[in-house]
Every structure is written in C-alpha cells, then in structure tokens.
Image (cartoon, rainbow, N blue to C red):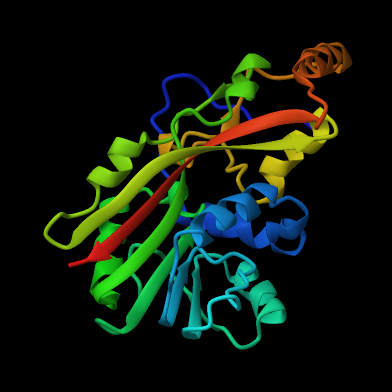
Length: 266
C-alpha cells in the first residue's frame, strides 16, 4: 500500500463530494477498521443522558443507542448515501437523512439531543455546522461530540510520514457561538489503537474512508495522511523496520488526540 501524497504548501479545502464518495465506498468494511470510533463512542457515552429524539451527525453505518432508555427515536444524518444504506441494514428503525452537517434539513427546535462521533474533523466550516445544529436543537438540548484534534498520529511522524494538522481544541470550541451555546466541558483525551502490522495500521485509516485523495483541491481541513512516497520494496522494508521499533506488547500503536465536548443550547 502506498499512502497518498500531497505537495508542500497546499492549503487544504474539503470537497464534500469527495468525502461522500470515499465514505460511501468504505461503508461495507467500516466495522473492520473502526476500533477508534468504538473507543471514542465509549468516552462520549460516559457523559451522556440523552432523551427524546436524538440526532446522530455523521452517523456512518450506525451506533447502538439502546442502552439509553429515554431515547424515543434516532435520526441518522450522513453525507454518504452508502453509509446510510448500510445503517438501514444494521438499524432499520432509525430514520436516515443524507445531508451535510452544515445545512441540516430538519425543522427548527425538533431535536432533543445531538451526538457526533469523529465526523466533524472533515467539516470545512465548523461555525456553520454548529449554527445549523443549534437551529434544529431544542433549548437546553445537549450536544455531545468527539472530534480528532491537533497532536494526533504522532507515530506516523516518527515513521517519516508527513501529516496535515488537525484543529487544536481551542479552535474547535471557538467555533461555537456563545450567544447560542454554553460549553459545559471540553477536554482532550488520547486514544491509542494497536495493530498487528504496519499494513493493517495504514489500512485502518483508509478503511474508514479517511484517506481523502490529496491533490490541489484538498486542503488542510481534509487532514489526510501524506508522505514523501514509497519508491519500492527497499523503502517499504525500511519503513517496516522503523515500525517494528515502535511495537509494544499490544502491537504497533497509533495515537489520536480526541476532543470531547459537551455543549448546551441556550
């Protein structure tokens, strides 16, 4: 596997159609690669007491909310139609909406609780997304979200890869309009996933649809993994050797910094 390459000096922009296409393509194999999503889901669930109608933004192939007895219905929103097709197989009772998080096509004040797990790092305009969410969320409704943040993928840097930077926690929280939202908590939590080998590690990124093609149309918001290029078997073997030096008893680690935020609509 050769990770995709981006040249220096390109200021990334997210092409929503590319994001939708990549995540749709990953839908059927998503659950084979989503260890990180499961761990961040657990972290979000620990602080949640949702009720009524819950909106899941960037729902992917779906999340099991059955442990929350006060949820009456779930609306799953995703930009990728393929993800929603898979979700309907997994959770046939969920309502699905294929739409962008920046323009949520639901009635004003129609949602009781909002959840979003590792989706909004792909959003090129968080402020607009948060405004759209505030419009559909009822007053005093809670928003629980996890976003990949600055400092993630440090092991890839150690292996000689270049990675575009994710947003810092302060930038993420600054996109909430304080007249609409009150941030109750915001923290960074490191989550490390372990892999049997380097190929599995790299495919874990690609497998969840996160390997956005790095070209002149892709900006820093895409945060895709890039490197100087692997020119042949010799380069690959050297890379494997460096990866083995990172190995722990659990496997080769890949660490993400996850921003965990709980906000309440005023």
